[in-house]
Length: 192
Image 1 (cartoon, helix red, strand yellow):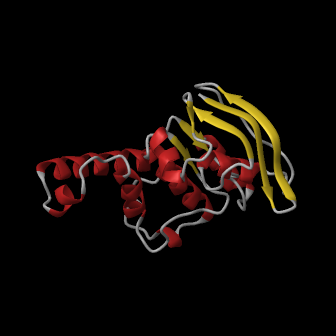
Image 2 (cartoon, rainbow, N blue to C red; image 1 turned 180 degrees about the vertical axis):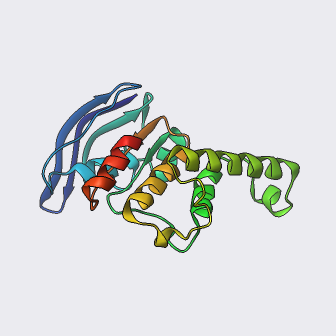
Image 3 (cartoon, rainbow, N blue to C red; image 1 turned 30 degrees about the vertical axis):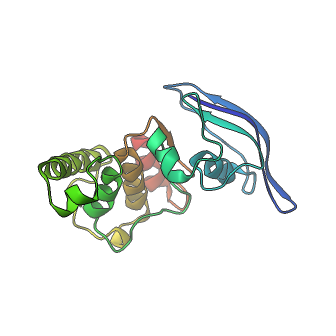
């Protein structure tokens, strides 16, 4: 599913990722471990298209995505969470999720402006899918809470729901339990 060959990223004189080779098969669960500063997040940023490699190749489902921007990587089927939770903090839980669901809709600008039958159908489907994601991550009943008002574990659950709402084939979780106490860690590990 994912094949990385000789992946390298330099930032000026700093070698952040050096010649990484990695193969991820469909259905496989892997963990990238290492101390702070070892390049784990940079590796995820390279896979996700947030930064591009200095050298090497990233292929997903047989397609070279080495120089692809994040939206192309997401369209290909890779989703991720970030070490620092990236939510639309002033929006509600459901509004955050709907934004992720809309990335898979096909109705264009005119369909949305005219509220076409296709737009209405996709909006219903997005709301249904968002509700399913809330249930899956254990956040049903919290749809109208503002994202910034959620505790750390709940924000991470929402971040996972945002990633899952894009219907990825590959999900990357970047330190999902960072900053949590033991009880919160257990809850999130159970979800994962």
